[in-house]
View 1: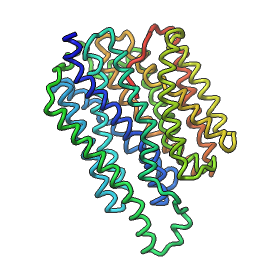
View 2: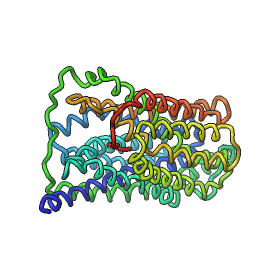
View 3: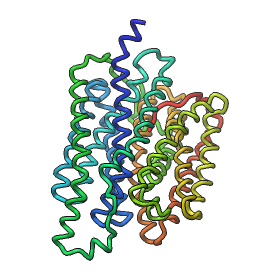
View 4: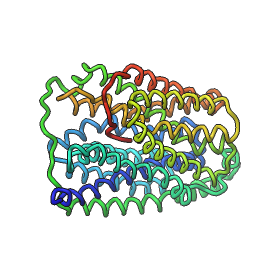
Length: 419
């Protein structure tokens, strides 16, 4: 009982981090169409929001791991939260300058903070308490990530999205003075939500600074040969590739959903945020239900089934019409839910001293979220068809299905990690 009380406050505080980074990530589907409208962006240009966010995971994953090893989890969390708050505050000058590139810079700073937070919080949660219940604690914390995925688009849409946005043609027809005033009004709506979030994160940072947490530094690894030594394990190599494509698919599906709802399914801009929230809810439910199914079905077998079903639904997105395509996207969100943690768990299974190196490499592969959305955006712009561009997503799910098939003999029984 004393052991439980010792870790309770730390577990509560770390769990809150899962909610906060889930919330900021799931504001992106609202921010992307808003900035696209304000600056009259192409699909490719709008997709750079995701690139600014996910390139940070590639650049910061290994440095974040080194911070954990040298200074411990608490220091890493404080550094991550500080960058998170600073990035949120940078949205104010970005809005004042009315320059799209400044918004991308602010998002990059936020994402640097999130990379360090995720690198610290996931393993820290596993060592806080009974080792036999580590995965249970992690899955519980991830449920708050799912809750944020449901709430963020609705809250963000209420305070950021314009009720009746002007089309690119209407904006182009305005005088220069009227156009600047319109852009100023649109970008100003972003300042309040991100500034308030920055204040909240700053307050959370102060709480972590003055709260005594269990000091659990990363143990020194016994593996030699550098971080890339982990590639000698076949399951690690496969997991890096599969995670690259999975995160690319996740970002393409969730980040473009509001734009897809308005451009393809004919949903009013003021209502699109609710469908994005529904996708977040489907994602959260999918994780709970998937975890339950794993009691009876091998995780890799379930992953294969989910990847194939997601592929079928992607074909509906490409060739369907009207609201059916939007419902298919929400269905895809459900079947994506178990993919990241299952790929992660299989990737680090049975590799001993190379586990930390493999973890860093798999986190770095999240850069797929920076690379593949611009490919989808460019394909949409060049073909003139938003739906045909989702062949990029179909390819991603085929890669995940191949990963599941090639690792079908894996003995991993529970998932760990999460995104």
